[in-house]
Image (cartoon, rainbow, N blue to C red; front, side, top):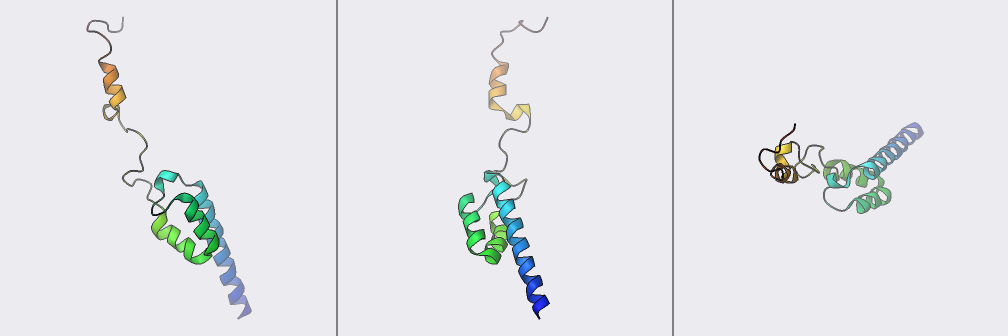
Length: 94
């Protein structure tokens, strides 16, 4: 019985540490639910529950909508498209 308790405590500590490090290092744009600082607090205060909630609710997917920070292609970038019209006609590369 003592071995089982030691194993369960070790698993709980490992899950908490892993979740805490992941919550600290993740980009703030991928955090869902509550702000990143509150997730870190929840993981510390409620070790097992906070960690499970982090992995199920708080951690956004890598390719989720809204996780992109910038345009993917040049024709998606408004500033790039505006810059195309700054050169007068006939003033191309020589």
